[in-house]
Image (cartoon, rainbow, N blue to C red):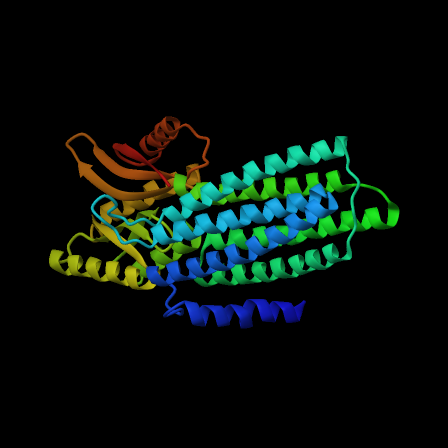
Length: 398
């Protein structure tokens, strides 16, 4: 097993990458990423077509629905590789007038189409297998079938290592899903061999049952793939680790005293657009602050390969009354619920009372009624703080 892993994941993968991917170490470059996708798709098409032909011939000769089902599984994998190839090719096209953010999401779209095809194939295989359980056929045994199926398991395991290695190199969920599908194929083919051995030694025909098992594997793989590709298309939450790194990078600049409202837009792998609010002291030179924001945006591009737009929020830092009032409001909010947070705090004094104005961040998943939260906190501020303070609160959801 260790030898196969070394051969598949390091030696053979390295050989193919070095010969077919130019500038292969620069994986953040779109053209290099596309080349990796084309290579992986080409290997997938070649291997799966070979396996489909071999298993189809065996299935017909042996009258085995489970082997035939496994052949169709490989055929769907070949179709998936073709669609992935087209998806990577379109995703690699540069931005144009109609698509100012590029075509990167085509990788997700191609993955979704592949997932739907896998589900359709799984349903068809399930139907055929159930019919075989009801009306079983006699299985004809030939030693060559065991040899070919054993080679199939070994080849699929190598493809698992190969696709996993590519997915790790270019951080592609599509390739990681393809790797998982290859591993599932190993298991399903092993189940087919197990069914044939059961028939050989015990004369018990479980061919249709094994076919149902393979079909269920295909259906589960299609379902998981749909989830993985649909979420980024709908708009999923950004990686918390990425948010933490962006926050740390921005706060590393002494002039920035706070960061909030970080939004990450995913326009395809390696194509992210980030917007955020950076809090800076209100009395700093405007040109100096603007120059700093430009510098931070360029640094975010260099470190995380994302286009950043930063909104500057001026914050009063040298007024003792404002600082103390802000601290009191923060404590009231945290006492109400530790998961809530406050930003964009400011005060407006009037002849009869003082307005404290701020944004209240309520995380997604909270079952509280936003109107109830605002009402409760307004009452807490009015009753607990010394003096006439009235809160003006805007809800943020992050």
